[in-house]
Length: 424
Image 1 (cartoon, one colour):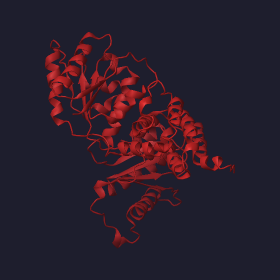
Image 2 (cartoon, one colour):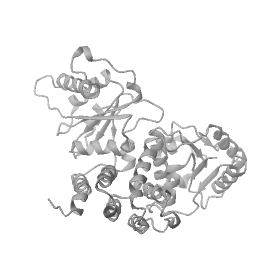
Image 3 (cartoon, helix red, strand yellow):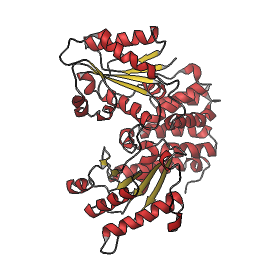
Image 4 (cartoon, rainbow, N blue to C red):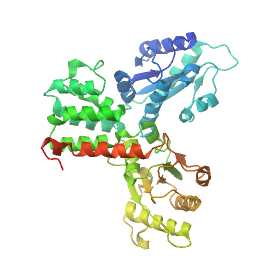
């Protein structure tokens, strides 16, 4: 049957621990599912446990137990982010948030977990005596909706599969896989008995999904001598956008099971390439279903709103639909089955007129996601207000962040040349 990840901060909370144990036992005995539970007390800011990363990326369902302690846990927040990232990418993953301690949805929003809002909560009523069995009955009833398989066919599952395939070239030298795990700080969890089989490569692929950029580069350098030039180039391309914070990147995705509607995203980046890497990170560099185009503009006439809109409108038709002439401007039948990103970078901070032009663009193409590169400074309140419902991606970038990422990616892309003794 399925694997069910249970996210929690239950240690020291008698009721939360009782709910955890009841769910864990009944998942096994009544539903024949495999619960995935870590009961260690993880301090804030601690590193990801490698096994938990694997659980999050492969589970078929998840139960998120939210007590007062969990709402303060950066660990729980990262777990929720990975789960909702998968859902936003189209995985049929079942996520069941559970409110304990009489918590309300507003408490969840205040804690920074507002993305759980659209999902129906199981909860303990504020004015009633908490009852473990009754609450667990509500939770387990949701498992009638559990899909047969929630991994593999979504963009994240495909990214992990590609990574495992590239890493498999190093299988004949299994010590390299162990050294790679060590570079990723995953050596204590590394399943040494599968170093010669695909399972070891998939384990490493999971670690590459969330490891810090410097560790990824160290691991890449360990693997590089064992890979062919073609694989090395592909692996470098897959890793290029992984410097982007995964939670920030998820802000570029529409809500799960919902098409984008007049969606505008602001990124305080200077380079168009940075914006494109955010999209690649969000979509796990998927090769179909997501389309991305970039444009720059700087109006010169008096009608700055209209001039921008006309230029952008023409770019949408030409770049996405190959429609240069007016008579060719017909949307294909599958336009709603693909997600379209237009990156706009004027190399200067946007103003209220820019925001007005974006509004007109959305009136013409409501399904278009507009990503605006605003420059390194954070947009001021007046500009943010002009964009109305735009999402500002956080954490904010600095010029140093972009420069560091650019140099890192140059090193990755030129590694095959360096191995051949070429140092341009």
